[in-house]
Length: 468
Image 1 (cartoon, rainbow, N blue to C red):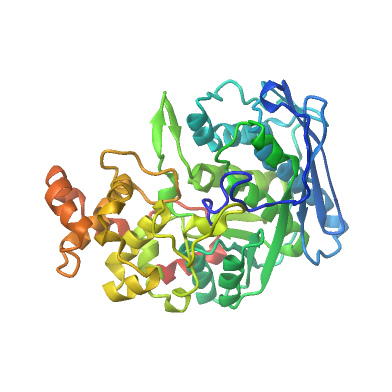
Image 2 (image 1 turned 60 degrees about the horizontal axis):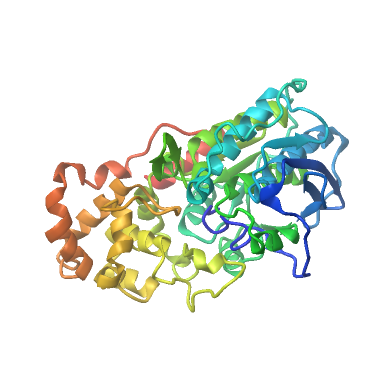
């Protein structure tokens, strides 16, 4: 599932905003306490309640369709997963005011949970803080010191996998990799995107569409001047799927987060800022360990694509022709508000730029132009966008795109191919940018080799042969 599709509430989202207009009395930037009030679940609906100071309640709902009855043996695990969802989803509301104190209604958290949340809110909101001129270091502090939780036992969860679908290439590669080993899996997504639903249907897998409805006051808070910006939405979706795994019975959640997601976007005043932090390996380790110890010993959380760079993934996707007329990584397709592209690709955003560039070495030029409907590399007006991908006179965009070094490797590969050399931006790369680079650092092949760093459970590791 793509992080970028829903990364700022409420402008784009894995959640929706209820349409009823709400007038709020909250002045978020003046508040002193952010409160986790309560969470509950009944009949397929989770209710997550927050508040600033002692003001009005902000109520979010998450709807799990056709939810089965929860076995008594799973209740403790479900309650722990639900509480974590409450704590993680609160990031959408906390950021509106970033008050100096965080209060959890049922008392201090055990240290492992508090440490996980401190890391998530600090690093997952690092881009938000950077763009708003804030420093959250020393400010984000969940209450520690609660009783340690008993070690979670195995629940004998069914050996099947939830595979989050985001509409883009990565999750479709993960689906096909699992299908290649005959793995039992369900394509799952959060929200109401028709594009994602279409891609999920095309996988041929069973589907599960979970709905997240943000508290209606959130829109008004932003309208009257709340802090706003990027949130670690992959973490929110991960927590939702942990609840779903216990509720419906799955022993693994396999995201499609690549190795490149762990690379920072930039460094600012001593802090690394990574747009994709909750897609990165550090968060995967933190949450995976927490679920093993506090929810179910046999619930695995991983990324099936973690060993691979973006270029390795696009090489594999280039073989999956049945998806070419359905997928899109363009984030403008996933907005709640504002216009969407007339087709699946706007051709202007960093995601369009990067996917075009990353696919180009592995597809014929006519096939690539057929997918996008235009040649993005033969347009002088796109130079600044591609410069940012290359980290040439700019930093990497705040988007889910690959590393600057792999973008440079892809551009260099194209610059050596006659069919691309006369295109405007390839010609510019050859004449202006390439002389400043070390050609020895531009080889494509090293980016196609897998890393040994991953948390893929043994029963899914055979799927890695799909990338050979």
